[in-house]
Length: 634
Image (cartoon, rainbow, N blue to C red; front, side):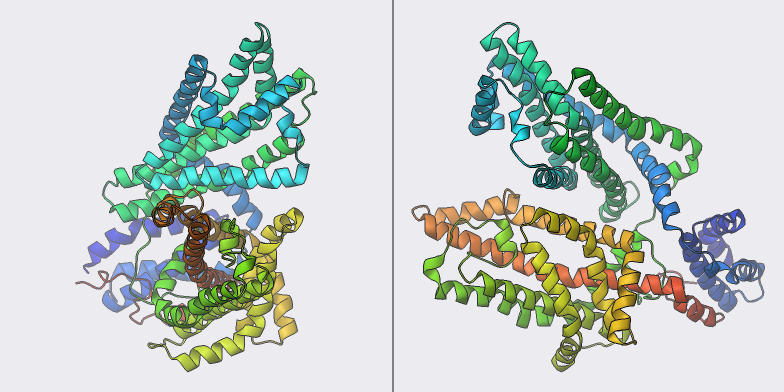
């Protein structure tokens, strides 16, 4: 490569590094990443331009910061605050047109629901179901039209509503991958449902008496919008995130569609993460505030208007203010993740997006070490053993098995539930052990899979992994809402433990103590990793089971062959869904372990700077660790 081309290609990066270095308040992780890249540029310059000024300049940059680069400690609170005060508002500003489109589609759909109900208020039965309408009519006749919000206890209702709202929003978001059409469909459907629900009370009341309609409308409005202000607004914003993905596919610009999807997917996910607190507040309101229908109207209006004020202030006004203050961030063009054919550096400080992308890249490189034990040992055990138990206890079948049962390998559920749980735990343990084995093989630069090596690795790691997997399965199968809720926030630490303990050279008790401590120190990134892997699992589950598209296709095909046999249909359907989910869960577990292993190495690099010093030792030597195949062209 010519020197002028080399300078032109990298000058913006060098300038950014100088600005961060001079500021004295730079993000240490961003500074470290740029420093690593500049040391590689310096190595390249010393090899190809040893007597040119560019080498002197790069040497000056590297020497000036090396003495203090790792003395700067990352401040998690500062990063957290930066996301909410700058990062997320910038993404919202970029998505402002998409937010407008999402709002317009939702508003028009609400009008359609209102007009359709006005034409025939029984239209609500089509949208809200006969059972819901009959229940609502009963509550109206009893003089308490909003009694539905008083039927459940607070905590179980909170958990159900919180996760259901996240499910609806993420489904609305992820369906944007179908060129925005899927997202628009969900916005229209939810808009019609809200318009129909709200107007049904008015027209039902009008059928009972002239003034009753207005009274019922105001009663329902001042009740549902206590939580609906945040909940409905968040769904519309999730729609904007979905349209962002769809537009990335429809209008990729100079990128390939795959690269554009990477960039817009990351932007959309930032918006989705930003909605979680608002879903949390909406669930709290719906579970513990909305039920107090006797609350004075002034209090209800205060909550509703205050909620809308917060939504408008944070999602519309603040993004405009931040964008005017930081126009350079709005114009910043993100680069897609390069699918390098070179080795992935393990000892490297990684931002969250790098943790996630590098996990997938490394999974591709070590897939051969996971694939063979997965398909030759783990999946046969995880599929055949429950089938054998089912055959042994055929008379004890319960044909009403749902998706959750399928996910934990009970198809169908029998009196052998105890044994099915142990089979699940054992097979998931083998999957996680295979992830550890793959990481160790990658570190050793092994080329071929050897079964004996895998078995020895499993025997070495199983004592660490099995207790953790047992806790994980217990958490999944536990029906206690408190345990489920608290366990969700402890899972990032739990998933951090296996590779951290296994890799430690210290005694088991010391390794466990330090791993717990480090797991809590890395909780924020671990929680984000868990959310992403959970989102992937959730989306696949939606597609395969329940009301998912693939799930519906499977059900239709099976129903064609068992139209006269309810038992046969349920048995084959549950078995098919169960097998598909077994295959997926045993593939996602090694990926999750690799992700948390990357988190472990990132934390080690912050504390010990192993990779940094290794890279410094390579100064003056030709290195391709951070280069593409084009960077050595003349």
